[in-house]
Structure formats: structure tokens, C-alpha cells
Image (cartoon, rainbow, N blue to C red; front, top):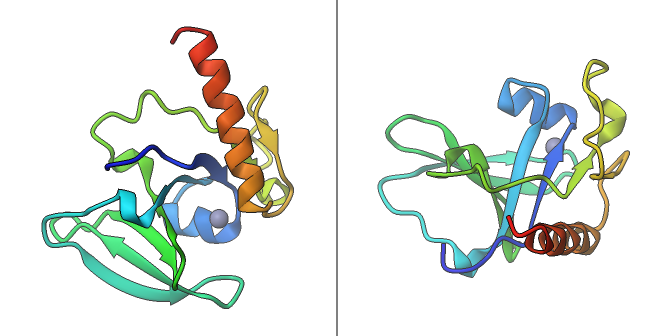
Length: 138
Ligand SMILES: [Zn+2]
């Protein structure tokens, strides 16, 4: 990574639940130019809920999903659980909360969106979280 993330959010959509095999997906967004993958990643194309082709990239060794990206998008999403140290991250938003599992509560102080907000909105939420994080001296 050569640049800072653009935003970090949790997604509760059915697709992310299925893909993660869990209750939600975690998405850490970067500009494509700020991320380089080495090793021998494998890719697979799928079609997202909006009908847009999505490129999924998996580790060639263990098969875990590393990134996904909408076709021709200047940004891509990293699965933050694949980072060496994801402990510094805290989500700035939760999206598709309308399909959140009923036993999960909203994270306090985190922006909530019943569907998919504009990406610019998620960047603002992230900037707000970063500012609070730095203010707290953590
Ligand atoms: Zn999703």
C-alpha cells in the first residue's frame, strides 16, 4: 500500500454475508494506484447485484479473497482481515443495515445506512472517524 485508505465500512448485504460465510463483510477501500499485490494471486469475475461485473482476487496459496473491484472503477476494496495488522481499524459506517442479522446491534457512533450510500458520503464518514481518532491521541 502506498496511500491511505479512502474509507472503511461494514456491509450487511446478502451477497457479503454469503461471500464472507458470516454476518457481514468488511470493506477497506483504496485508490487502485495505491495498492500493489505480489505473489501469484488468482482472479475470478462475477456480476454484482447492480449488474456490474466485479473482479475478485484471491490468494494463490490459501484461496482467501484479498480484493474486489467493479469493472473500470478507480477504487478497489481490500478485505481488511488479510492485513498483517488490522487492529488499528474501526469502521466509519455500516451499510445495507436493512438486512443486518437480527442479533447484531448497530455499532455506537457509527453512521448507519439502510442501503448503499454514495461513496463520497462514506469518505466523509471516514474522515470524521480519522479526525476523532487523532484527537483522542490513539
Ligand atoms: Zn455487501
